Amino acid sequence: MIAAVIADIVRSRELDDRAGAQRAIRDAIARAQTDAPLARTPLTAVVGDELQGEYPTIGAAAAALLLVRLNLPDGIECRFGVGVGDVRPVELGDRTIPEGPAWWAARAAIERVEAMQQRVAPLARTWFEAESGADAVVRQGVALANAYALSRDQLVSSMSERTRRLTYGRCLGRSQRDLAEAEGVTQSAVSQALASAGSAAVVEGFLALRAEAES
Image: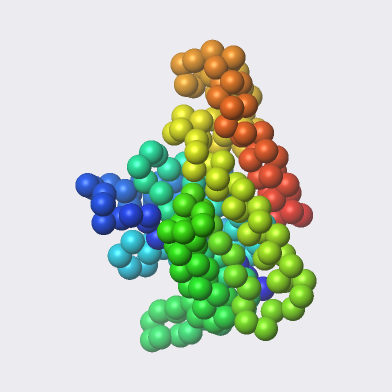
């Protein structure tokens, strides 16, 4: 089974510079893939504000999407629908397009998280759906992923841009001293920022997901 991802830009019509936002998102995706190459097919713009990509497992998708979120500057956010299931590429002349139950589930997932943002979970940005007919093990994995994603998104959505950068660095194993030098602040300031944002939990979650994805 594959984790297919559909992403779009939150409140894209309100942005003053949509082209600049798309470039920032592209750069965030490229950096995340360079630092942690977890994608089967990295997220790529397909039409308008929509991007699509494929990951080999739920864990790989969850880890990679966290890095993308941490990379984005203030004022630019994406939401992600992750569909878990089979993919059946369709040949159309000289090109191949992704198709199949995983993609249908991804579409349902991004619609679900958008609806949740408007009601019960304004800071939610990620949702997982299993393909129709998935077995109990897959459904359970998806349920656990959603419980995790809701908590993680709450923390990340509340972080400042600097704290997201610091958290990203810690996910990649950079020391607080190195991060402090890069930011031009004291190590104590870095430690306080990470602690107040709950970054340690985010980092430990990422490391667990990455270990699973790379095993």
